[in-house]
Every structure is written in C-alpha cells, then in structure tokens.
Length: 299
Image 1 (cartoon, rainbow, N blue to C red):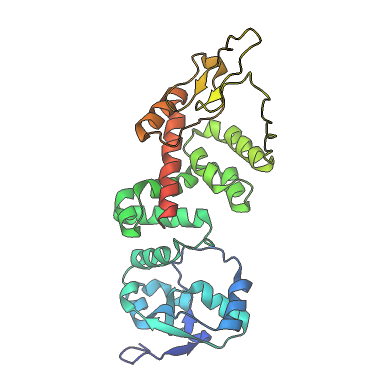
Image 2: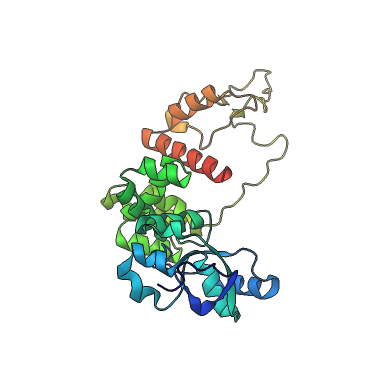
C-alpha cells in the first residue's frame, strides 16, 4: 500500500489527511477561533496520524470513509477542520501507527486527547466512555486508562440515563451539565420535574441579601457566637440559639437554611452537622459534588 516503508514527511497537504472515522466528537465548536489562531500564530503542535497502510490493516472496512488520503488523523481532527477554514494548504504531522491497531485503541486515543478539552460536547464524551466500558468491561478499568476516578466516569455516564428530551436540553444548553448528571440517576418519572426545577433555578438571578447594620435584627440567632444577644431593659438577656457545625437549633421546623462553620471546625464536626441536617440522598449528592470539584481542581 502507498506510504509503507517510506520516511514520513514533516508536513503534508490537507488533501492527504483524513478525519478519524472513530472520533467521538460529532460536532466541532468554535472552529473559526482555532482557524484565526492558525492564521495569526501558525501551527503550534503537529497532528498525530497513522499511515493509510497501518489503518487499513486494522480497519479494512473503513477504506471508503478515508478516501484516497495517505494519513488518518488520530489527534487533531479539529485542527484539520480549522486549517481548511483558515485557508492553509498543509499541516505538520507526527506519525504513530500503533494508535491505529484497533477501533477501541483509536477511540480511546481520540477520547484521551479530547477529555480535557472544553469543546467536546458532554453527551459525545459520555457515549465514547460507554463504548470504552463495552470494550474494557468495567467503569473502573476505563477510569484507570483515562486517568480519572470511577466517580468521574459514573457521573458522565449518568447523562445517558436521561430521558431523550432532557438529553436534547443538555445539548442545547438549556439544562446545565452539573444538575443533569444528578438528574440522570433519578427514576425516569422524577427526571422531568427535577429538570424543570434546575432550569428555572438557573434562569433566576440570585439576589444578595441587604447588609444588616450594627444593632439591627438582634432577635435572630447567634452565628458561631459572634453576634451576642442584647440585654433587655430589665437587664435579663434574651435567649438566643447558636448555629454552628456542632450545635444546631433543637426545633427542626425552624432549622437554618444554611450551614455556618467556624474557621477551626474539624472535618469530623462538619460531617456530623451535615448528617444531622441532610437526607441520605442529599448527603450522596454532596459527596459526588465534592469528588467532582476535587477532580476538576486537580485536572
């Protein structure tokens, strides 16, 4: 086959490059932004490709998909499309035939290359992860291969449990990804009301409570023992209730709407306060959000 045994060139024309048929990304966003970067700054990073011969050895049924191209792009499909939009005639390449061994390898390579990029649609990412689970057998194995936690993989796959109309709402951006992942774990009958509530909440602007002046609102609870009660005219103190990580109001009906923890609160006391105020389902949601937040913070 063409290209076998030849030293690959540093750059090739766009006509010699074919998009990866197994690429998990169905849509390409902000192509013009990447195209403008290519016009102004040039190509910073080469696209990773496999030679035609190596690709067709593993995927003989894909010959029609790649046409007459000499190389198949493994990582850089978005740059290839942007290069065409920018009017470029060629791109630098880095050849790695090993990545074309199997469809799973190509899918995995494309997903790993895209998993940290914000422009990959969440549902496309979830579908690709689902395919990898089918190949490797468990979410834990896929998480390890992607360098992510099992919780991260599970949260993405939860999007595929959404009803079709809610998946469409995620694709259009009407339903945000974060609440959608939690809603996907609910029974189908509960998903629509939960989604409506999440959509409404996202459209409602948050209003900051007016700042209280010194001496106002002394009838309220003491928070962390900072605002003490004022003495009455007779000199007796008005009973107050302290709200903090370990000491909450005894009346459940008048429980505070938020949690207030002193700076020196221990993790154990915080957990105890949360357990005393939240349902088991809410506790699970808080745990998932913490894991997701820590995963995002560590990249």
